[in-house]
Image (cartoon, rainbow, N blue to C red; front, side, top):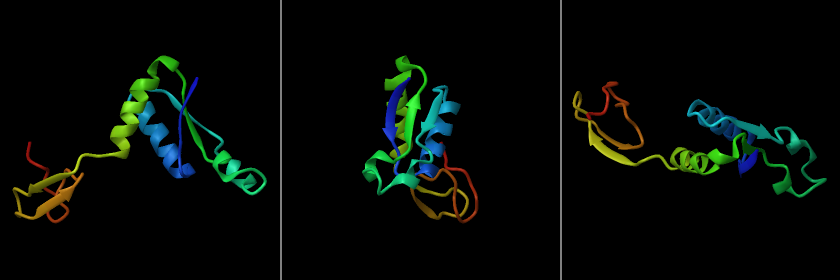
Length: 101
């Protein structure tokens, strides 16, 4: 096992671990409940950590996590209602049409 990163909170750590695991990189969350001892130990020592089970997949996991944390920014016009969509969205918020290929 190799440590991939720390997460700012348990919700993000769990989300990232789940997404990495579904992408074929088995990942576990460690120190899930260490926040209860913040103050007794330095706060950065209580953050949840993501650990990759297979050390050979560490670089692949880093790449996937970078993609998850930095989604592409897009700017497109909806083919259905002509609404301009900005950001990482692939569906129109107004009419529900899918982003054109």
